[in-house]
Length: 172
Image (cartoon, rainbow, N blue to C red; front, side, top):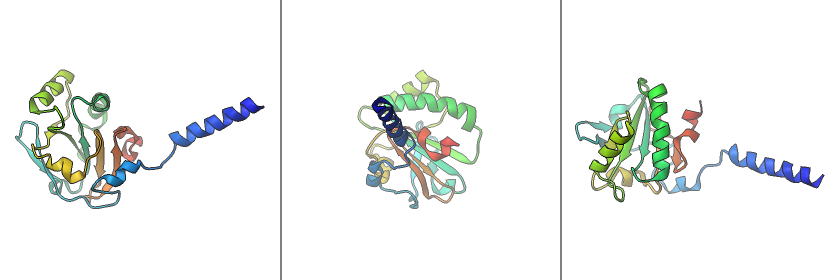
């Protein structure tokens, strides 16, 4: 009887963690909180040929992901993301994916180019400038960090470090 009780308690605890809607406390340290309007920002593609701004993306959801070439969680996330991007999101025009690399620790543009080529990623890489303005604007504290900004420029969801797949948009 005691074993059954312990087993039931263990199952309850596991389900409580798995299905918890509690937010990550690290989100409170970011610049923008859920429901807040995000200030306009600008970021260039890795090759520098194209500049994108939040202002120009009004009317579309924006998936903004800060990542690196060296972080194990980022590497795993991008492998999963690229496959899903190819299968489900590449041709959609209601959401824009901005995957931002930057001079975070040992990364530089050449390393990002090699990383993109080596993995045959099809998503467009963007690159934060040497001053890491976008990184600072959003108050990034962990990599990867992902923001989902709605059509009006309001922060709809955020994920600090644990992967975009747990975000509401991707649970559908």
